[in-house]
Amino acid sequence: MWSDPDSMNRSSPAAGSGAEAASGAERLERAPLSAQRACISAIATPPGEGALSIVRLSGRDALKIADRFFKGARPLVDAPSRTIHYGHVADPATGAMIDEVLVSVFRAPRSFTGEDCVEITGHGGVLVTQQVFEATLAAGARAAEPGEFTQRAFLNGRMDLSQAEAVADLIHAQSAAAADAARVQLEGRLGDEVAEFRQALVDATAMVELELDFSEEDVEFADRAQLRGLLQGLSDRVEGLLETYEAGRLIREGVRTAIIGRPNAGKSTLLNALVGKERAIVTPQAGTTRDTIEVEWSHRGLRFVLIDTAGIRETDDLVEAEGVRRSTETLRDADLVLYLKEASLPLESAERDGIDAFRGQLRPGVSLLRILTQVDKAGTALEPGMEWDLAISALTGQGMSDLRQRMLDAALDRPLPAPGSVTVTSSRHRDALRRTGEHVRNALHGLDGGLPGDLLAIDLRGALHQLGLITGAITNEDVLDSIFSRFCIGK
Image (cartoon, rainbow, N blue to C red; front, side, top):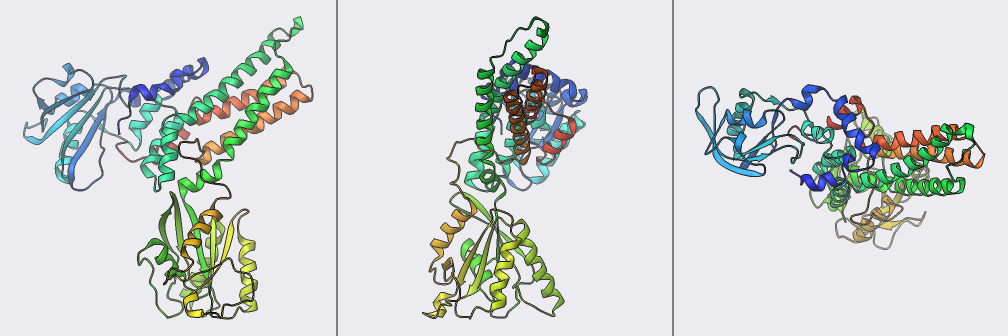
């Protein structure tokens, strides 16, 4: 995907404050020289047969390298930016034609990466696409690493680091809510918020540190009341962003929903009914499910990862016992638990105690819904031994609509973020914001306690550092490698 370079420049670090603008040059200095200049190439479309395929190049001499295998009406080195050219890809060594193609030219800096770029659109066969790619390598390009195109866009100041991460999030989005959150971040909205935070901190730090330079003259540049108001407002805004994380995490990763209960409680039947497919085997025989089965299901824009588990009971069967152990382990990572019990069977004291034990194993804030199943068979003989949240029949559909809504409500203790709103979905961003908030609160406590400016400045600079980690104004190669390693090759 080629994003409009002008729109991306709007919220790039280079377009921000002086401190942000300087970071672009710092990023380029930190990057290896070869990574900034060598021409890279990759197949940008998924493997397989299709109507079209794309091979893309970026970097030093990309146009000259392309001219070694592209045969068109004019050399690409003479072509204007943002133009498309018809021709053929030929083997650089033999001159034999490989494919009939269209080539798009994007000249630096008006390209996705900020470098000279070439996109070759050809026929979508597996073999012919590979041959075109190999022709680019034979002409002098090297194979790109995962995420290297987007990494170069970041290093060249075309986007901040939060936008770069949003590219991968958008590619991997499995629900409408996840795609919306990624698009908002890709637009630079999170980066804009962070830039505002940083600018406020830069102004506050400048006032405090200016006082230090004139400490002997006893000059006060920072209005303490104004400074406190600024820091308190910043603290509130950071906390507001942090409050979106739990919903954002579930949007990005999906709601891990463990379906547990005794054998033949209807766990597999319920999973199949929710997803609308026969994904789990259902038989009258107890113990059919021996291992956990994970199936993705989307409801009202939110992705659920449904986990069908082995029936929980005492057993001498080693395989079934291992399945029971894995079933209980799913509770540790679950975001939501559905405990199922067949409505027509009596509630035994051991089962009642087991439900209480399961609740004790859940992480704080995780809901457990107690559900009576197979009510179409039970008639009026519903077990009155304890309070149940829902009574359903996966076969007839009774109570299923209520169950879906209860699952959505239980997964989120607050409504889903409004479409287009800024949501924190990354644990990396959450950790940086959390530490930013800690530094700002420390500075507030110090201000109220009458701490001198040099001590206040330590926390202010610490907060600036943490915010810089989000946008990439401050980073290191290890962080970049970790982030871009999860990208696909060609992006």
